[in-house]
Structure formats: C-alpha cells, structure tokens
Image (cartoon, rainbow, N blue to C red):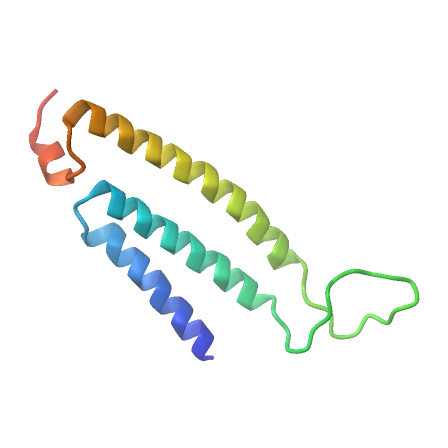
Length: 112
C-alpha cells in the first residue's frame, strides 16, 4: 500500500510543477513526471506477488500469471508520451525564439 502512496506523491510533485511553476522547461518536466507516475500506477495495478510472465506454453499450467494488459497499455503510453514531449519541447523552442524568454508571465505581457 505504501507503493501506491509514493506513486501519489510522485504524481502530486509533477502536478505541482505544472500548476505553480512559471518556467516553461519546469512545466514540461512536471508533465513528464506526471506521465511517469501514471505509467507506474498502471504497472502496479497489473502486478502480482510471485507472478509469472504472461507467456503461454502448452506444457505449463496457467497459475498466478501477471496481467499483460497493463504492460501493453504502458508500452503504448510511453510511445505517446514521447511524441507529446517532443511536440511540447518544439513549441517551447519556438516560443523562446520569438519572445527570448521561458517565463510565462513575461510572455503573457508581450504583444505580437
């Protein structure tokens, strides 16, 4: 149960960075931390103590196998989070090229 609590703390740290920081790079890092916390939670949901890998062989019994669905979801989530991270970093670079700052309060004040 403490692992779920630590996962919640990790997600809370990422959410704090997204909501309270002013620097675009710190906001992006907070978003990445939130994504990792969600991936960790999905892995924890599918975990079984002393579980076997979900590879089926005809001579083996299906006893105490780990659920493969959360593993597949996490692999898909990793690919999607990589693409969104690349997109957000590209947008941040364009914003920096135009306004010469990563501070969102200064960007809001500038016109043009």
